[in-house]
Image (cartoon, rainbow, N blue to C red; front, side, top):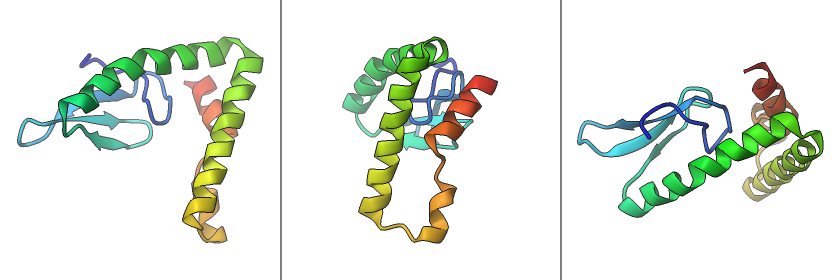
Length: 110
């Protein structure tokens, strides 16, 4: 579990690891997207343990099945659009959020 795994946030393979803060509390750190997610309760660790195999399976399938990848990338785009609409992000800040196509390109080059 402490080895680098697929990030559950950006789906970059071999980029997320479990680390410990100064108080020995666990957190996730992704080298690809710089996410740090602190796991404040045992339940959070349970969810991560269950989600990791699914994230890895999704990434593996996206790399071999173009139709599946297109479906997942469309889901990612819809989620980004919903987040942007909900946050009412100014137009000049929107390009800073990666598009699904950029994510796919990064995965293929990794």
